[in-house]
Image 1 (cartoon, helix red, strand yellow):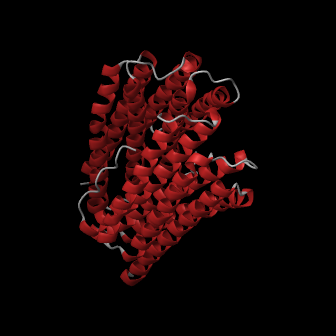
Image 2: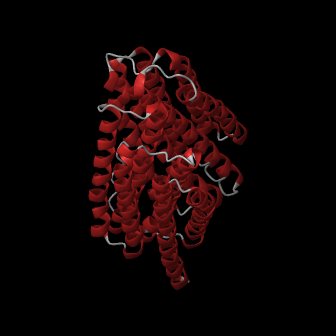
Image 3: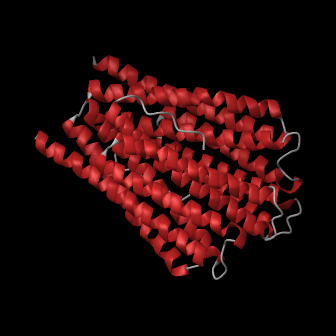
Length: 219
Length: 219
């Protein structure tokens, strides 16, 4: 019975890692669709989100079943409860990639990004995808040191996000209000995507150490 | 032992309702600070958030303890797990009120809102506070019918949010890029605040009925 439980627990970890891989791929494609005004890619990201959402429901269902039938304690309890929080974080990451894709689709055939901020979004996109990749790896290895690295990787996204706002606010913005609004919201989506990856890292550290999870930063 | 458990379970519900009352008050004051360029109110909201954050940690800690020691099943299990999700939603609502307060503080002594959108934000603020009030009530009554009302209340926030974007994008926006960016982000904060209140309603319905929670909308 306990062997079956342990198999289910490690299957849950594999599932979460797969989900995180899907969110990573969604943000990678959403960023390309944004940079290249690629409508097909944007529509693909939007259509694919249901897969992540279905996995979120599946993880929650499995976790409930394990809590009810196996009544885990200590580290195993933390892992089962944590899996629900992590699945919810990954679902949000997927939803944020969809938001990026939605703006890309809305502005097609134009590019939503003025020339001035292309490099910023290429950078934020690459960093966000890297964060999702690290989180995906951490969900398999459960290594708290790699999980802690997520916070440092997030600092780079935050720095780029702040830089974007200096371009929007302090400089002479030439491309009008509509594109400024798009760029401000897009920046927010990347920042939040990265924050959720950091939350996953904190959960993994919590599961490994048993301390209460460090509180979310106010983003 | 089961009596103690039931007392702890109902204390958890009271705690969540109190937390929701704090988030409601935070958004009410953040909105007033935004409409009146009131720096003191803004700083109050920002400083007070730690209280909500501490309650979130406390709820998570209590829920873990109940899962480990009482090993609840069925409806009680749903309630304990749900309390963690709900506390996280309320914590985000508080954080979003802080975001509103931050923009109000940043623009002080100016008002962050141009005249054209004051009425929109007064309306969204009132609706958001009403949603938090309904959620607060639902967390005590656990009445699924009142919980279902949250979704209809949210529709009014979404409608006002869409209206705001027509003002930003379609009309001739006169007050520059910086204020457009503020207004776009502020609109997003109110919309997300309302979404989290709706999530609380869905959780309460789930706890009452035992079906899996309806999936989050893509906001």
